[in-house]
Length: 286
Image (cartoon, rainbow, N blue to C red; front, side, top):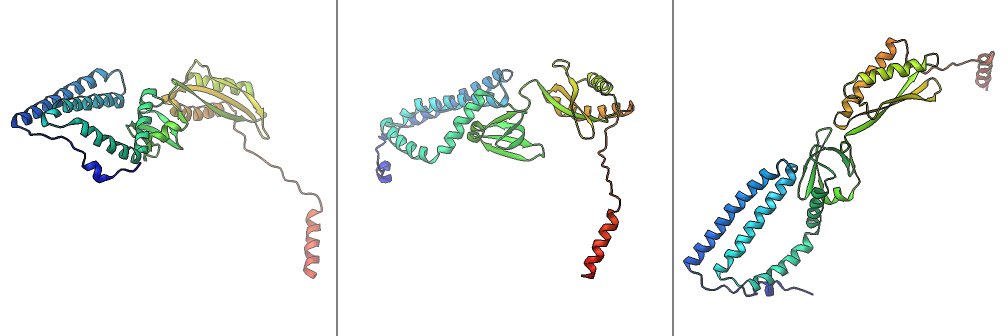
């Protein structure tokens, strides 16, 4: 079905005679509506400030604000002698045309609303989504803003965020990390485990529940390999991980337990060097 722009513009809007009283009434109703909308929006922000994240409370406040203004406009519009039936026809046709042209915008809008209600991410969360890793700066109506660990600003459309796998590193209260600790074969593995446990237990942010675990995992080519599982608060995970690693190394070395350096022994077969020289001489004569 084809639409003729000229026919759309010729739809009668039914504008009649407008008096000064009609204009004043329209202005007063619209002004009162704006004032009421602002007062209600301010109170909504204040009430929801402690119950919802800032971006969600702001969304509800704006939504209520515009609903009240539209409601006031609809009430005041008849004073301008508009025939709303003709206006609705024109608006419906225009809305259909705009809808086809703004499918991605609508998709991002709906995805943004789902993200705000489902809440898989919140402001300040460290996440990985759509191959982007960083901290959530803002969740907007159409897009999500992420600040990478290098300080780069990245804006991702909400549709892409909603349909991608989201890895939230701080959603759970605790997060585990793993160390592989190598010691020499001549060192006492039981002593190394005990020393590592003592260092972990002394750290203020290493959790006792779930408890840490240190054990002999496997025998390497040059070392006995210990594995340590340690839990830390998700918000302090990186600091604990980097701090404990160095402290464990120092404690082991203070007790005579060293990290082995890979060594290789190269043996030469007797007479091999002389044979190689003889081959080189023969090649030279050729």
